[in-house]
Image 1: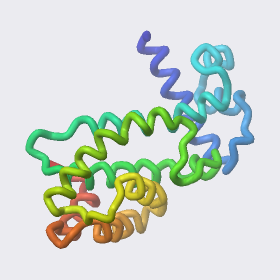
Image 2 (image 1 turned 60 degrees about the horizontal axis):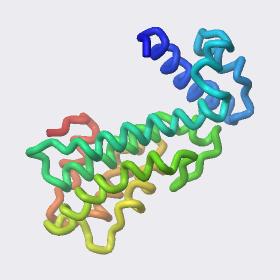
Image 3 (image 1 turned 90 degrees about the horizontal axis):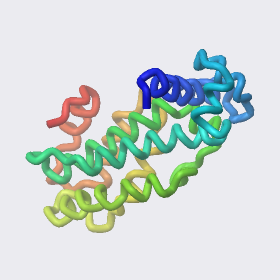
Length: 190
């Protein structure tokens, strides 16, 4: 794809996220989205079938990024650190997109593009099971529940404290939750 075409796609997706978030509803027109993106309707339709495809693309990109992150564990990274980094990243993404998520009517634990989330889950589960086996995550904790709980964290002022509370409930005493919270604030990971 040409760079200008890729740039138009990105602008359209960002505009969709912004316009739906500002409106607090998906009852916006494709013209509103195209205008916010600074492109013509023809350009919009060259890239997307319509408004729902644009709305879905926001979730597709979020879950695609999560799938990449779950798949790309650093060689020297402990499985528990990988799990916590994923939870932190997801909470940051959903906090950033909270107005869009609410406006689009997306509920926690659901996504209009389940196949993309399905691509994320096996790699996340691999790190999760390794961290559980090493005694860092409680045996009763479930990775799907953890990601859903991270996804409901939407208040930017309370995000880190809520994330620390989530980690404290999931992890055993072998995990320094205060250190995790400090990393989440600074976004400084190995």
